[in-house]
Length: 89
Image (cartoon, rainbow, N blue to C red; front, top):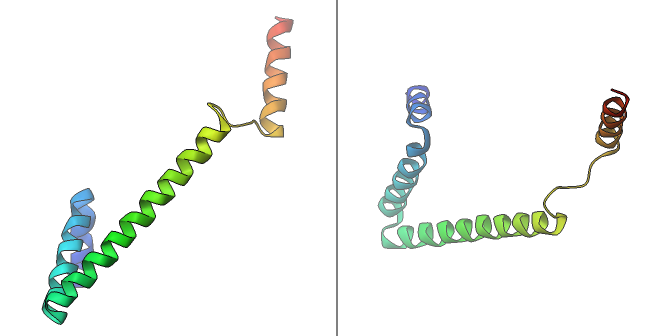
């Protein structure tokens, strides 16, 4: 049963996540009543805040690097060899 359910969720794509959230909300409300839904809402809000903070941190890190991140030693060597090869021709 669970394997079929998981296969169905794979086929749903992005629409599977809201469905799973709705199922969890209904289960929380059924198990704990209104308190279950409140706990679910708090946990969901904390998760969204954590994701938001992570995205903001990555965005700031990217902005500090500039438009292009620095090249590694291998990339610098490859770029220099291409420039030398083009200059010879």
